[in-house]
Image: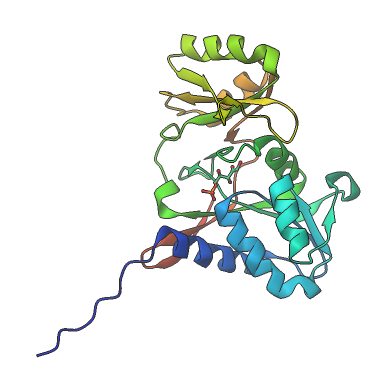
Length: 232
Ligand code: 5RP
């Protein structure tokens, strides 16, 4: 007797492809779209190439995304060339049930926050492992001016966190903006708006990876049963 075949659960990579494709429905034909950074966004960029003739182009949040967009023939505009964008599509390291996020795992948080701020709507694309009740499970990235790194790390330690300078090939990672990244663990960020406001004011902090002021309005979440749309 043959047994009914149960479909294998989708891999994380397949979930990323699914949400990357689903995000196309938010792209406004004839306009410039804001594009984030990361492995999930790479899937979105690949999907965007299928409708490149219907859009003017993109504003990108990183050198890596710019290179991928251009390689696929999608024109990339400087942020300063475009006053406002209808939509910004980006991934997240964590997202809570209100649409607040932690971002910056790919070190692109500063440009991501700039492009998000000039966009009317933030559509987050993520797999379900990123959905959390309280932000703080993923290390919090903070971009800092190098001379401030040690002081900023001590300030996080005083808050009960533990901060480390992000390294690449044994050297401090240098962002697209020529700065460093500090990753902070051990914090529970239960008041993201206040937290973002406070840390943003510390001397030498370029950008904190909490996106509460620039939170998502929509999250396309890849789940075992398909794409779930969360609205905030
Ligand atoms: C890059 C980011 C990314 O959006 C975040 O790290 C998620 O990346 P991925 O889609 O690869 O999981 O903030 O700075």
